[in-house]
Length: 224
Length: 260
Ligand code: HEM
Image (cartoon, rainbow over all chains, first blue to last red; front, side, top):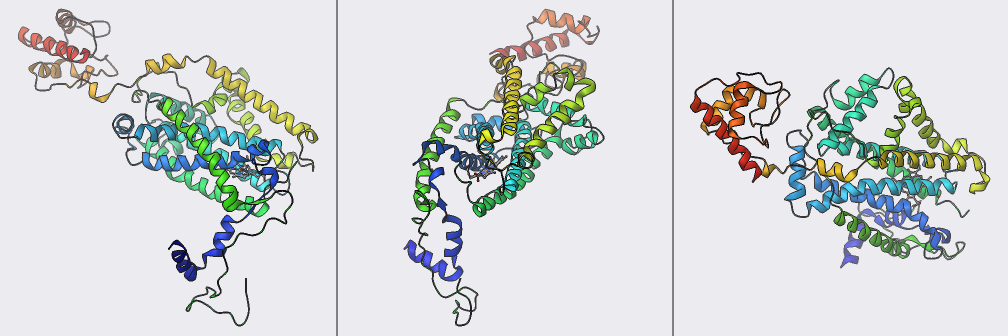
């Protein structure tokens, strides 16, 4: 049955070559933890991706209840946390995932760094990786405000004051982020929400696509 | 791909009518014990992923994610703290060479150098050798940077009493917030005399504290209403004794309801 469906589709759009391009590649011995246990360091990139997927899924479910306005944001999170079935776990996954992803990202970066895997020809992919790191920090910063509790509010205020002290463009930068030159309020919350949910994930997906395409083109770096 | 004359297509499309079998490439010619990613290696990867997921879910179940009280911009005593992975940057700004007149050092120059160097690391460390001992400068700088980040994070976090912080900032469940009975005759008196400073839900405001959760008797409240206290001037209440009675009864009843 499945084979018939596959054949029916393949007959029309010829997906076998696409599928082989995506799924068919070699895993050399030196990165395979089944052969060399120390090769588990090569898992860090994949596990980072795994946590990113967890973040996307849990985040999608959180937006089913979350309301990005200053009257209701906190209340919606509180409701989620106390009333909605399993929402405490979903929010917990998103909350802890945000920290775990930074840890995994750091481990992955250190593995690439200490193995010198960023050397020719992989310089570009390293730079894409560092940009991904910045995006993830941006996601952490903007996401921290969204529950609109005291720690969120005051940490964001400090962050914006730091942005304001940048020479020449500081004030504009702060206004761009906060939506107002002085107030951290309704505008700030909707802006951070949009940045957290649309702008940064969009950039993240694009960079991740480049990251993976480059890995596939170049293959994993050889044994040391 | 098959090209040239004699090709057959599916209908009027550009899809070749010739089917290719969906079989994995043969990796046995590759060096060492190379195996195919799909499906051989992916099955093992799933195992790693499953173990990771179980550990992760245990963490989320054991530690529900924190939520403090709703943001109160007028709370001037709150000591802000960023999430842990920003603590090192935050701590850096406490050093003299990175704050005050030298704030540019703390917010731009030092982080800029560190993250800039990270970004262009392949071009700074451009020798052919990949092993750590073949590039002592790069590895040394990274170890130094790591040690500084860990030290700064530790310095920042070790002064914080996380438990008492969480305790002091517990959220007030919306359900336990007192229902204010605006039909109460005392509320009408409250509205006239007190509301402009103490807020429409007795929650307080910029000029006056909340009247919920105060430990005062009806007599004391009556006295404060007439004679003032602290920065509250005397004579806020002016009306009949009956109204004063209604007012104090109302405030006391709200506080009784709240302490239940
Ligand atoms: C969400 C973030 C990221 C994901 C999901 C990700 C994923 C991956 C994966 C799956 C690999 C294959 C090898 C492995 O798993 O170790 C890889 C390789 C690589 N990554 Fe990342 N990565 C991320 C962030 C980064 C960052 C922050 C950097 C550097 C600063 C980076 C630099 C590299 C480089 C240079 C390679 C090639 C290494 C080699 O060929 O040995 N990546 N990445």
